[in-house]
Length: 84
Image 1: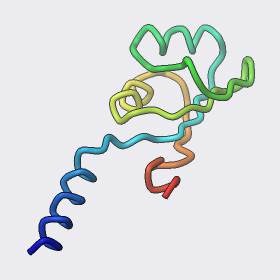
Image 2: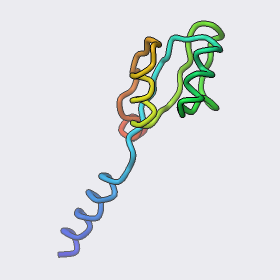
Image 3: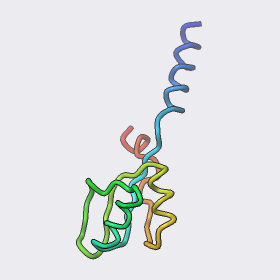
């Protein structure tokens, strides 16, 4: 019985864990400012000025990136699984 409860708790915790993605966005300074205004967190990541920005983004932020005019590439589709 305890094992069943432990498995159930683990499944519930996993379901509540937000999914994050590592994404490369091909843009410049102006594009990053535009994305930041829309709510995409650009305060951490790897930026090659005028070329691209690589960062970890939530599902909500990824949707905002998809709606933008900037090309992007998802490098890692589940950061939690990647680190495990």
